[in-house]
Image (cartoon, rainbow, N blue to C red):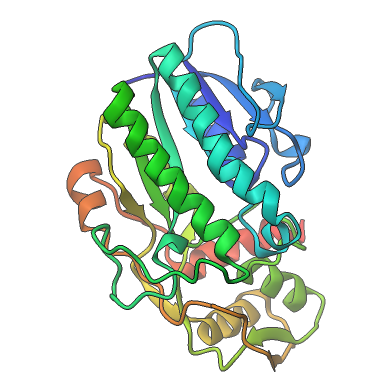
Amino acid sequence: MSPERVVVTGGAGFLGSHVCEALLNEGAQVVCVDDFRTGSRANVPEGVGVVTADVSRPLDLLGPVDLVLHLACPASPVDYLRMPVDTLRTGGFGTYHALELARRKDARVVVASTSEVYGDPLEHPQRESYWGHVNPIGPRSVYDEAKRFGEAMTMAFRQEHGVNAGIVRIFNTYGPRMRATDGRMIPTFLRQALAGEPLTVHGDGRQTRSLCYVSDLVRGLLAMARTDQAGPINLGNPAEVTVLDVAHKTIEVTGSTSGIRHVEAMTDDPRRRRPDIALARQVLGWQPKVPLEEGLRSFARHFAG
């Protein structure tokens, strides 16, 4: 499928802007829908149409739409902890309106979910069949449960209305256009390393993450868009590393003299996180290519500039 007109909700955000850029390079007409609360107009590539709108309200776009990519949602703890109700509204009403737009336009729609639906997992690595271990009233729950509800809404539209809808579960992703004050691990480590400040590691640092460079993630997302798969399908890098290892690698690639400072562990912080991507390999022909060190060096160059 080569979509002619694509709507990207959250297209001014970190991931959304890279998706818009990739679609433009494929020759698509791209419309970014964003309210710019966490995204930036500077992220939106030239040539992308911009609609300033809150996706938690009905979306009424003129003209045909071939594909909707619903990426809008505060994704950083800094954002969803200061906007808990808006995060739930975006995950609930926003997903409904993106799906409703796809239904009216008879378009394919891919909804971005998250590895956070697995919570602090009791299964490792996490397969799509795992139902998760989530604290429904903890501080992270507004993001976790918004995404879980969004998945249920997506499947309901597919079953009741026959919408060609799919779900991807995105694991930790990093790269250019993440804000320095984003609050997530890698931009925080880079900001601290480049400033010569101690890198703050929550807890003992032995908790693990699986880190996917943004260009790899975009390839997977667009591969999903070109299918009729319902999912959910995990998209992430199965190479598992500890947070402490990431801190040391960040210091190494930046040539920083920073040390490491341990701070209090975060509430409900998952101890282990690693995707099983067998399904993505099988049905999408996708797997990540960029090693962590290469991705960190690339991000650091953009970050410093």
